[in-house]
Structures are given as C-alpha cells and as structure tokens.
Amino acid sequence: MARKPVVDQFACTGCGTCAEIAGNTFALNVDELAQVIDPAGNPESEIQEAIDTCPVEAISWEE
Ligand code: SF4
Image (tube, rainbow, N blue to C red):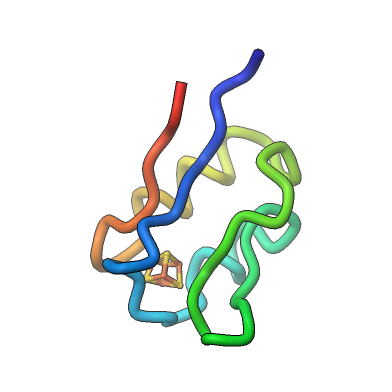
C-alpha cells in the first residue's frame, strides 16, 4: 500500500497552503486546521511539495 500523508493538528496553524497546493488531498476542517481528505488525492510530487512548503512542518509521510 502506498504511503499516506498525515497532518499533525497540534502543529498546524491553518495557513491553508497545503490545500492550495494539493487541494484534493488536504482541506481545512471546521476548526480551520488541515486534514487529509484523500491520501491519494494528488500525485505524490504535489503532496511532497505541500510537505516541503508547510511553514511549520506539520505534514509527514506515514509508511
Ligand atoms: S501548510 Fe501546514 S500549517 Fe498550513 S494548513 Fe497545511 S498543514 Fe497546516
């Protein structure tokens, strides 16, 4: 099974960048924190870009 991105909701500041980069994978929830809506919603390269761009390094891969 492919690896999945996970969001540390305690670290997330709700900036929304990940949802802009990979909007089929990440979305802000009712608490304005990012959550994974589909772990394979975007190509891994776009998910990786979201991981690399997150200002607080709140996203990581779960094998
Ligand atoms: S880029 Fe990081 S801090 Fe910003 S909403 Fe996504 S997980 Fe949260």
